[in-house]
Length: 397
Ligand code: SF4
Image (spheres, rainbow, N blue to C red):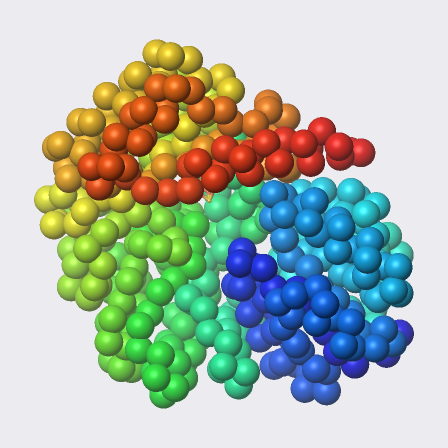
């Protein structure tokens, strides 16, 4: 098959994946058209021969993707898939009609695909063969495609609800400081003077285990970003967050010198030690509180992630979490970012059923929202959780 063009099926959740793949392909080969399509109908403008349509999707988009795949397959298009769902469930993804599936890291394997190297089992393995981030550009300035620089990939933790350790691996891989600076310089030249980052734990940048901060390395990074003309730096905030145990005085003193964000996003997930154990968070309430105390001391507003509606959550767990939230809002000026539990495929908690909120959740979360202390897509996620659970139950694996 001679590939003339790759059509990237854009969704609101896959912009970063598409940008990373376009950057990898474009820096390698310039003879293939790389086109983003926002609507299914746009695809029909391209002849079937030489066209490959690429999907990268989350589990809650599975039903929509399945419908589109049926239509495109009937017309004869070649279809490939990657991203969190395909990685968690490659066989199911092939079964609905995809020709090839990419699991784990995609940057190297997409190059193999366009070169005509096709695996016999139709699954490109980016899990056992991980990439070195610094061998690939973090974005594609030539196509005016930018995104926050992914400074670290991989997470050593195994939180029960999270797909990252499988998608990105458990070994922490940092992009080199030199490459981050080189690309930030290009961004600045093109008017991109605001720096944001992607990482499972931005305070772990440059550290061996990705957990105990390396303040010197982070200082070096932020200092050099300023030196090449970055005007605003957002570090430890969207679209990455920080582990509670990675917050200490040293790292806060460093980032305080450079950053523009008032908020630091920190994952807590529950105010019940029992739940923290069950979801394998690897920290307890005391560590969360210690982190919030330090953030407050350094003048940051903690923006704290919580997950509600675990099927094994008891009334006592819920009450403990609500009490903890009230305490941290009052004592540390914290804001809450609320989620409803989704049983994502490939995670240890995939088969325990959808997250379900109780009357007391709606009341408490609604009140905090009205008071301006809470935000998040927790209501929408309750619906998405049901969709994800039904995809899990229909999976052949
Ligand atoms: S939730 Fe965060 S710390 Fe836990 S496994 Fe996922 S990325 Fe790692």
